[in-house]
Picture 1 (tube, rainbow, N blue to C red):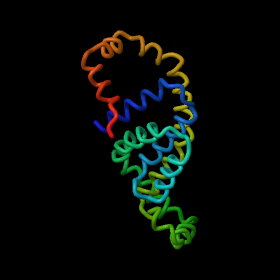
Picture 2: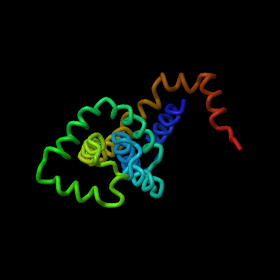
Picture 3: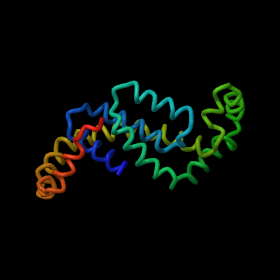
Picture 4: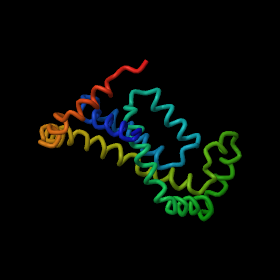
Amino acid sequence: MFFLKFISKFIKVLHAGESPPLIAAGFTMGFVVGLTPLLTLQNVLILLIAFLTKVNLASVFFAMFAFGFVAYLIDPLYHSLGYYTLAEIQNIKPLWTAVYNWPVAPYTRFNNTVVMGSFLVALVLAVPVYFGVRKGIVAYRATFGKRIENSKIVKAIKGSSLYKWYVRIRDLEWN
């Protein structure tokens, strides 16, 4: 039920008039946090930035949970990339040694191969994800959004007594 609430909020955001760049920025932040292990300094900073800026939080959490499940499937790829980056590239070993001696470095967990690999993948894909989501939102609003809203299935669901009951419960104020 918890995840369904994020999906419904994300769909509302797609239909609402909120700025596509803010939705895409939130989605991208959630994408990066979702692909990487959660308890790291960089993820805490990304989430802090998300809370302090005007990015859409529903898109942050939707992407975070969606890509969090995907991340576990590609952990072996992350491990291989992280191992290659940390151990096989001889020219940057002194850099990793120097960075790891910084006082905050252990909180980043960059010495972990999965953390390093997943963060590199997330950084490389962050820009294409941002522009792809931004373009997708604009295209969705221009074409699919109106068609889906006017479809017989959506009208039937919104006309059902179960949906009306759900809306009444959803809109209740819990004090």
